[in-house]
Image 1 (tube, rainbow, N blue to C red):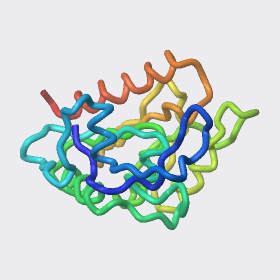
Image 2 (cartoon, one colour):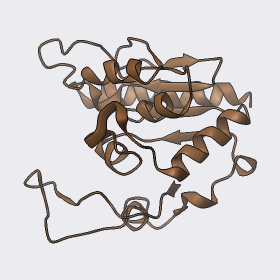
Image 3 (tube, helix red, strand yellow):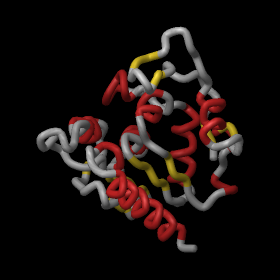
Amino acid sequence: MYAPDVPQMHVIDHSKGQPAEAESRNVLVESARIARGKITSLAKLTTADHDAVIFPGGFGAAKNLSTFAVDGKDCKVNREVERVLKDFHKAGKPIGLCCISPVLAAKVLSGAEVTVGHEEEEGGKWPYAGTAGAIKELGAKHCVKEVTEAHVDTKNKVVTTPAFMCETALHHIFDGIGAMVKNVLKLTGK
């Protein structure tokens, strides 16, 4: 596992759903807590060492891997994240992205096909459906998929799934992420 060695945009007190104003954290350090210490700086990730790369989603991807949470389609992508995406793409190695992280590929890989689920909120089932419009404005193609599905862009070897972009039971999200991982592994040809 890898993470950028940068300060977090802000720290959230998840028990209150509010920013913890007096706290600051580093993305790599916080990722090490989640990964139980088995983590390396993203700056050390190379295509020579791996058959594929998978980016998790969540607000951390929209706030710390990019500025999408604040800037929308005008976002900037962390330089190491951008380098990794471009390097794996150039090497013809598969890239998996889930939840909000497909916006990273939409921003960095011209003409990529990705999904974040549906393009309409559908009564709150897809509360972040507006992200599909931003993806199109970035020049990528958005493909409508269910939360249990993954979209495979075979030309660019990019595999995406909506995950938590949908308000649904966790087992449906699990199924979609599993489909993404399965398709990434299939694209490695191993």
